[in-house]
Length: 217
Image (cartoon, rainbow, N blue to C red; front, top):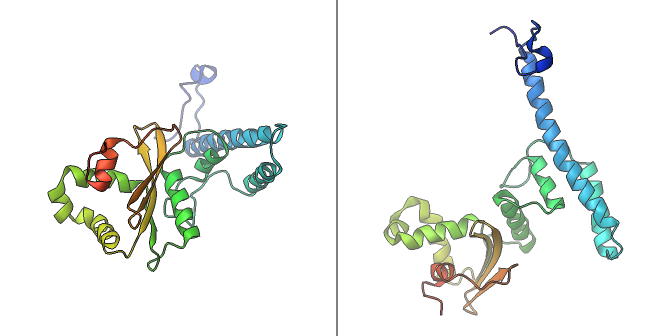
């Protein structure tokens, strides 16, 4: 292959124009930039619209203005740095809109929460990723694999620290029915399971049984 012919374009289909191969690379980068620009334009529009609301509080307005300033200093695309749940920088635009937040977004949020709480090795608080509930369900459905499988080693260690009192509180976020996120907070000293659902639903019996090995009433 030595050149490109634009057979998909009616304006060029009848012509015998040939273009260099490197043009395809430029087109690819331009398309990526176009998509990123669209995402950030939507984010800016959303934040600016919130500032126009008469009912906005001064605190919310300050956060909106800070968000706009942060967006100005962000590059459109690339890879996020400083977090384990790395993603495309353009994916961060969703934080400024009402778009669905994906697993990477939630894990980034949990990682920041863990840092704020100081959840290091000496802390009694642990914040788990969205992977926790998924792995817990797998362990519950296959107890033998949980007891011996290498892939469950970290989960077994977590269970041991909770049982021995080295960790007494654990929090996390989980996806329910593939359509919304819920928050979990487990306190082993108080023997409670906190469940936060924006839809005001009670904790599903299956999820509760995964956590405390008992059927919910």
